[in-house]
Each structure stands twice: as C-alpha cells, then as structure tokens.
Length: 459
Image 1: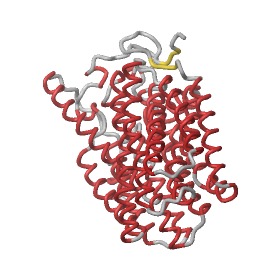
Image 2 (image 1 turned 90 degrees about the horizontal axis):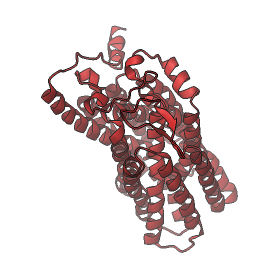
Image 3 (image 1 turned 90 degrees about the vertical axis):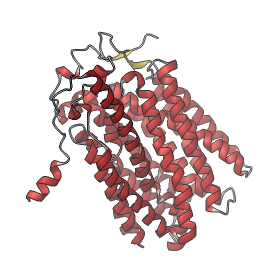
Image 4 (image 1 turned 135 degrees about the horizontal axis):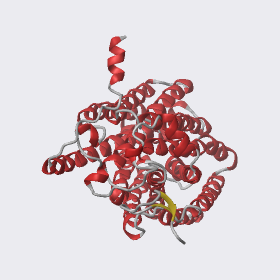
C-alpha cells in the first residue's frame, strides 16, 4: 500500500519553491526551461499522435486479414474517441492541480502498452477494449500541454508558441504514413502496432527526465511577471484566487461560461471534419479513385498533415500579429475555406496523385488553424488556473465529434456511399462557421489594461 501511495504522490502538483531574486539567474533559467519544456512536449505529443492513429494506417491490411467491415472498423475509432474525449475532460480537471510532468509521461507509456497488446489480438472485442484503454490514456497528453503553454509562455506570444506546438500533431501524422504504413506493407499490420507502442514507451521514459511542472515549482516568477505583462484584474488575477478547487474552476469558469460553450459547439463540428478527412480519405482514395498502393494514398495523408504544419503556424502568427491576439477572425476565415475546399475535393472526379495532394494538403492547412486557435481561445476566455480544464472540456466535446466521424460515418458509407460522406462534412463546415461568427469579436484585453479579462471588442 505504501508503494502505491508513493507512486501516486508523483502525480501531485509540486509545491512552489521560494522565488529566485537574482535577475540574471531568472533570465538564464527561463530561457533554458522554456526551450526544454517546448521541445519535450512537442516530441511527446507527436508520439501520442502516432499511437492514436497507428490503427488508421493498419486498416487496409487489417480489414483484408480479418475480413472486418467499415462499420466495425469505424466503431473502433469511435470507441477510442469516446474514451479519449471523456479522459480529456476528467484529466483536464485533474491536471490543473497535478504534476503535468508525470501526467503526460505515464499516459504516453500506457498508450504504448495498449498499442502492443492490440497488435497481438484477432477479435473485435479485444480490439475494442485495447483501443478504449488507449483512448483513455491518450487523454493524458493534451491537458498537460495546455498547462505548459499557459504557464511558460505569455499571452502576447502564445499564439505563435501554441501554433508551433500544434504542428506536433502533424509531425506525428507525417510519421504514421511513412513508418507505420511501411511496416504494415512490409511485415503486416501487427508489426506497425508493435513499432508504434515501442516508440511511445521509450519516449515516455524520456519525458520524465525532460519535463517540469510550472515556473513556480522551480523558484521562478510567473510568466506574466517575467514578461512584464501582468493583467490587473482583481476578479481574475491569479493572486486573488490562489486556492481554487476543481469544482470551483469547473462551475465558475467552464460550466457557466457562454464563450466556452460556443467554442465547444464549433469544435464539435471542426473535429468531425478533421477526423473524417484523416481517417476516411485513404479508403476513399483506394476504393473510389483507384489507388492500389497504401504508400501512394499515404502520401496524400502526409500532405494533409504537412499542410496542417503551415496552417497552425500561419494561424498563430495572424492572430498574434495582424489581429493583436484576436482568435475569432482567423477561426472564421479558415473554416469558410475548409468548407469550400471539401466541396471542391468532392466534385473533383479525376484521379491524379499530385492534384489530390494539393487539395488535401490545403484542407489540412485550414483545418489545423481553428483546431489550434479554438484551444487558445478556451484558455484566454476562461481563467489561467482553468487552462487544462477549459481545453479538456472543449476537447471532450470535440471528441464527441470524432465519435460521429467514426462508426456513424462508417454506417453512412456502407448504406449510402461516398456522397453521404462529403455532404456530411460540408454541412459540418457550415454549422461551424455559424458558431464561430458569434465569437468574431470575443477576445482577451491587451496586457497591462485594468479591466476584465473577457470582453467584447467594439465592432
């Protein structure tokens, strides 16, 4: 019992150390830890994505090997989405008051374990159990990263840092079609799961060494104080609410916050689009457009992820620089473009690898912009102490959308064909635009302004 208690003590948030007073030491330490925290969570989350999507690129060979239909394969994806989304919500609430270092690392190790077990199975229910447990521990990845990005990087620069970190999805997504599809083509789908799992376990152990929790746990001042960007606000200032409980955070800054609910609604439909394009484009290319090699179809998905790299970076830069921290205009513009591009891809009947790469890459560019900026907006339209909780909450709603993109869309495809897929995703894009239009002017005030954090910018 004592051993279990000692193990779980690692997950408790470390106590703050006495604040360092020497300015050169603070400067040196902040520079060191900001770089180290960033590259560690970047690589770590990229590997989370590898173990989350390893199954996607095993689908063609797994389906042929075990004779599984689209609905069954889709429901495996939905089961992961359900458990992942619920885990995001719960782990988000917990990680605001936990040690993000161990939270992220242990979660990644366990996703690796369940990828390996999945690779040994041959029956649907064992697949389902493994993939639900994988989804649960996948939820240990994003909330700690949201916490790191909120505590280590200030508001005026957060769009760029968050945008750069968001490309870790795409790094992971780019690795999958190259490495995982290669393993599946060469040695069979089981080997691809073993490789993904092994990489995750090794990376999780490395994260334990690399990561730390918040600046205060290293004796550093808050990022706002370090950057001289303290927001004077008695209501939301961190110093006025030192001991918020999980329940207080959730009730006051999430459940009763209209901005969070609108963001969550938009995220739901954005996630249907993102997961549907990511998961179903490869079967579409091979069944409808006549692709015969997994690697060729994988190149198109690779373009989706690489497009997402540039989309995240451009969206972060535009929101920071052009719109001075306003996330709403970029979110709406990008979502309109997504909808138009999906309609073009639908009507593009010609089979041409390079044209498919161009269109799907452009869709990736515009999908990952709002996918990233909605997360930043959730942090900035709530409370710093609710960083993981707010992103965990909208992440949970988003992954309900991912559930729809799995089994339900698989059923639509079995019954109505590929036209139903495109009709669904275009409608989702239109609805997401409506939600985001309500938040066009919702924003956080500029640093050093004595006013409420959440406001409406004058139209």
